Amino acid sequence: FQEAFAKYISRDGPAYAEREKLTPAEAVALLVKVGGIPVLAHPSDTEGLDTYLSQLTQVGLEGSRYTTTATAMRQGSAC
Image (cartoon, rainbow, N blue to C red; front, side, top):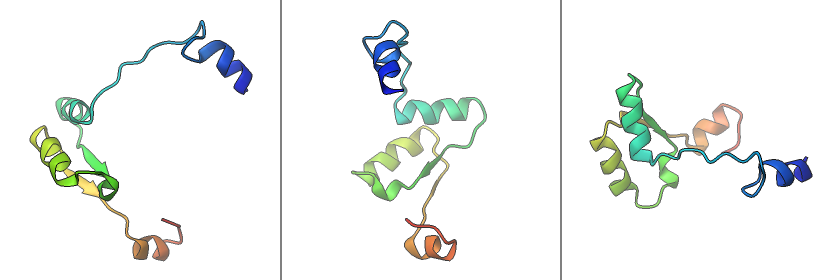
């Protein structure tokens, strides 16, 4: 599998296709434009969280989702 990836679809491979990349703010704005509800999952892992959230709410971020250790333990999953 790795050999096929490296040979055909790695950056230097003949079947590689560059993909369009969006910034988080562009993704939020696009979701709003098409009627979606943008939500940021697990933002506590984000460096510079206050600034990041401020920027994203300005373009339409609607909410965030957090999972605490206690919640994960009650649900029987690891954090």
